[in-house]
Length: 235
Image (cartoon, rainbow, N blue to C red; front, side):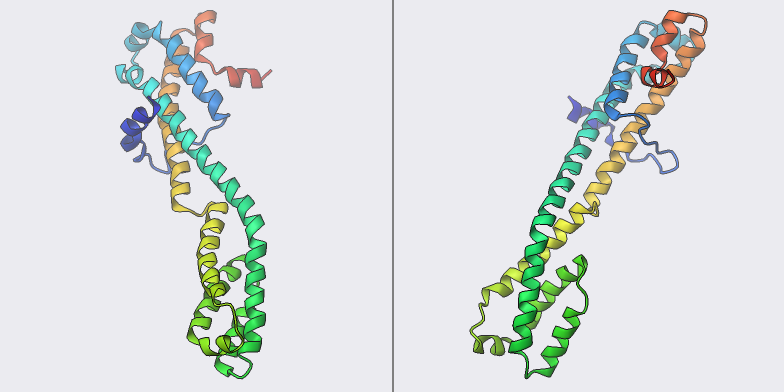
C-alpha cells in the first residue's frame, strides 16, 4: 500500500537536507512509471548488479520508495486543488467582504459623527483598501462597534452585521492564506514530496549508473537503464 510505504519512508525522507534536495525534472507520473519499469528490468540483472557493487538495499527499497513518492505526489496534488478552489472562492467572496467593509464604514461615519475618538478610528480603517487591509478592517470595525455600541443602537443598526464582519475576517484570512499557498501544511506537503522524490532518484540513479557500466557494450540490455523520456527528448 502506498500509504504504508509513505509512513515507513517518511522519517528517512524528512532528514533530506536542502542542499541534497532535488526537484522533478520531468512530469512526476512519467518518472514514477520509469522507476517501476526499471525495477522490473533490473531484477533480471540483480546478481550481476550486486556483483558490480550495487547494494541489496536498493532492490529492497526501490518499489516502496516509488509507492511512497506516488502517495506524496497525491497529497501535493490534493493541496494544489484546494488552493485552486480557494482562489475561486476568494474571487467570489472578496467582493462581498469588501462591500460589507464599505457599508460599515458608511454607517460608522454617520453613527459616530459626534464621537471624535471613534471617527479617528474610522478614518484609519478607511485609509487602505488592499486585500490584507480589508481582512484587518473587518476585524477593526467589529471591535469599534463593540466599544461604542450606543450610537449604533440609536440608529437601529443591525447588530448581527458585527458578528458577520468578525467571522468573515477570520474566514477570509484563512482563504487568502490557502489561495496564496501560505499555509504551513501546504509548504510542508511540497517539501516532503520533493524529499521523497530525492530518495527515489538517488536509488534510480544508482541502478542506472551500474547498469550502464555493466552493459555498455550490450545494446539491448543497456536500453533498460536509460530514461525513455530523456532519450525521446533528444530526438
